[in-house]
Amino acid sequence: MSESAVERTARALDLIPYIVEHPGVSIEELSREFSTSESEISEILNIVFMCGLPGYTHLELIDLTTEGGEVSVMDAQNLDKPRRLSQVEVVSILLGLRNLRIQGTSESITSLIDSLEQKLMSLLDDIRVVSSVDTLDAVETSSWKGAIQSSIVSQTSLEIEYISLTNEILSTRTINPIRMYAHSGQLYVEAHCIDIAQNRNFRLDRIQSVKPVGEFRAVKTVSEEPQEIMVEAIIPTSARLFLERNEGIVKSVEPLGDGLKIVFVVSSAPWLCRNLAAIDGAVEVLSPQSIVDEFKSLAARSLGNYKNEENEENLLK
Image (cartoon, rainbow, N blue to C red):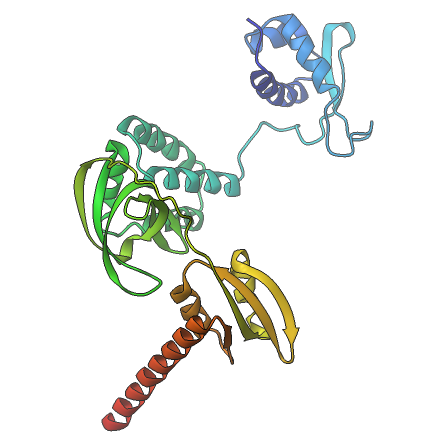
């Protein structure tokens, strides 16, 4: 049976370095060495003859001859040595495997991941590189990780108590976990939240309790789309990094005096107010009035907390 395109490409990548090391080798010898037919070797060489680096002129193509049934490579371009993964490539693959494992996999898949990891780790001889690979494990400290992994594999729902990032309110949610992933030093679970019939991402360090509640619960349907709010605000020009990080919610940007007039479109007003309050510099919310009031209330509470802390420091002096 003839080889697939992927198999033929892999064989070609092995074939060129071998010919470079054995100039004048015959097609017959190559067929024996690579356990294939002479016609297959000839077809691969005909393809390789038309391959090369970008530019693809005669100066960048691989140059070889097959005179008298003997093969020699005059210009192998960058294929003169056997394929070898760089440390960056090995680390990237290892990180991908670690991320795959924490998403929750069956025992057979986990066993394959472990075997492949051991082979790849043997290619790394620099302890600093090895330690950089292990940084993903450093965030896997949540006591809920095992229960969530088990839920993903067994397709069971969980009831969790969760403190929201947007309003710091503790709520009880029933979720169908989909995957776990690490981001910016934190471990998250992506899950379908049955109560609101939408997918959400939950930070494991903000989960207060986890309780299995049987097989995946039926997913509710919601007839209405989540309501979006258009908010106008003025922020300092120094806050452009905030805009870049949240470009998905920015509808328009307009210079105004020493600042920028921004129109945001968000589904969570408390989240926007908290992030605007964290900006270094003067921020003013223009509309709608309900968000103006909410932002002023948040600013007043923050200022009150600051004054209380200042008074406590003065009392301690």
